[in-house]
Length: 262
Ligand code: ZN
Image (tube, rainbow, N blue to C red; front, side):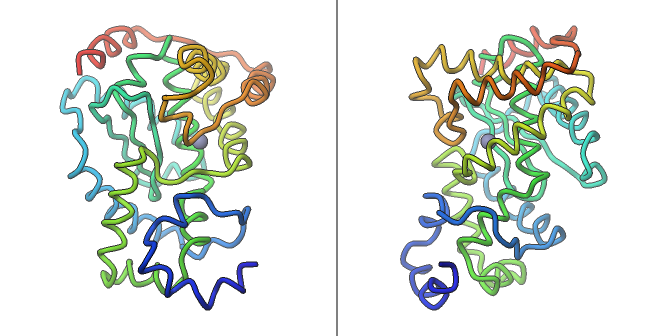
């Protein structure tokens, strides 16, 4: 399947840019042509571009809080030594997403709608898990030839980085991940949350709350890129059952009020 596409990909690339990549590729799993070092370089370029296009929250109290939660979670992973970055976007839309190279974005809308700190932590842990599992660069590897990606790293393809960044901003996500990517991220998020002392059921509660509020998931950007079903929620709840942890801290409710003002 993949090899039959090879010959034509470079030609359709110019015409369709990131379309085939973001619309979701049928190939599951597969090789990742992007090394960790390369991924971190691509991530920095993308991050700089995205940050120019969104409205980042400058309230240091909110930023420090989200960064603190994120770094706690990262410390539970095998990518703890890398310089992860967490940004808060001033946007009512309920959303969070990961881009390659250890960058996670959380919208103020998601903070404002979370019922407890552990629900917010659940969403962040899920995004960190996508990053640790390198789902973003797996998608890039499926959509582009290795030489195209190498061109980005050599600075020879700034247009592609711009297009990817523009798509992220427009669609509120780096990619539509497969169901198995989503399940894997959930599976990784649960022990990550527990390891940081949080009740991992917070992830299930976050999904449930958003589903209830949206009447089945429509209209919430997080769900358009993270399709959520009762099965998925039950799966997270079952995985969380063996763990204890805190659902809140002394800070969350004041952070939520601050986020709601954006
Ligand atoms: Zn996801």
